[in-house]
Length: 322
Image (cartoon, rainbow, N blue to C red; front, top):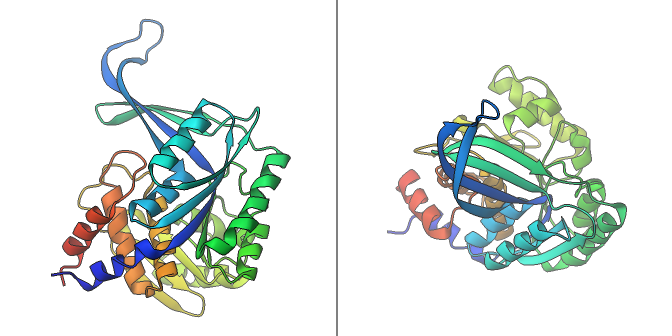
């Protein structure tokens, strides 16, 4: 029998989401370690296979389309091999691409070397965007707003969301809700956002160390009041997540993972589901339950990943049998 939450899940494919921000290419090299290098006391990895996935804002967009909804990804890349691969992967995922390829810039690339399911090394390649490319991306954001129901701004601190305040103001002037995945403790940059989705570390950077649940509630209310935020969704790792609404509303959701394999990308899944739920008109309690189950699916996978509609429906049946 189809549960109530499964029926709510069926509303999500009708939605259109705009995702803008720091997109990156996640590259994985997998291999075996059978000896230590004679040159230095480090393992030698015999690379046997590789994989490439969308990271950052790209992974948020992938989570949207994996649930059957429409998504446009607006991001800055370099005019390079990594940027072309990022565009190709996004296309295969059914994501509409609005990518500003900047000549001479480097697409943000994270290279991970993995052996026996353990990450041995991560190497990052990136350059900050130039003013011209940034202005072009911001102009495209204004043009794209009218064709979408909700905007997600995915901030990984790579520079693509410099001037994010203007983007939020543009969206809110058109009555389009804006969800922000934040970076750093300065939440004044996100003034006026509909929802900000920090993890506990990010929340404490912005609000101060949390002593207990009551203290978190007070600090969340103060953050929302000070920065004119409607809601804060704080993810708490193995303790689930809590959604605060300005004026006193609070909802808690327990973590739903049966096995935690890799937590990278779980926040991307959560904000994608919350954006879709908002666009579909779901109640906060239902949105939180679906987001919790989606996060439980994603953390059971290696690396940045997405939950598809079938996996999420199965997780909802498991997590909410009635």
